[in-house]
Image (cartoon, rainbow, N blue to C red):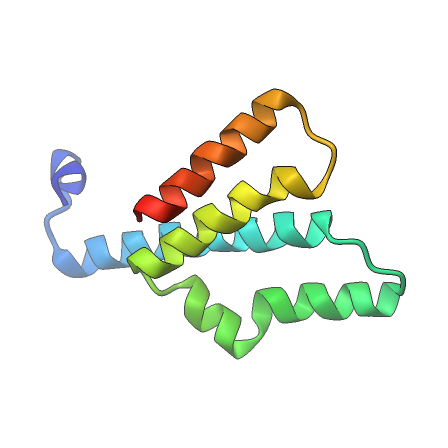
Length: 105
């Protein structure tokens, strides 16, 4: 709220909207990155997974809910991604930091 007040945004409804919008963007980014790292044998199954992970009603509900649990889950999934494929030591280090942030949040 203090960061928003620096920009002259003091309305709590606007701040709430901005937080939900930020979490929604981060969550959609995470869902797409997870989908890119998973391997499916069937192209139809690949499309169904992408569709369900982005626009199913429960995913949309969770994607826009601003809470510490949602933020922790985002950090957890982003932290696991470097371990699913061949990654450099730098990416693995960043994954470890994200897993630590997941634990903290």
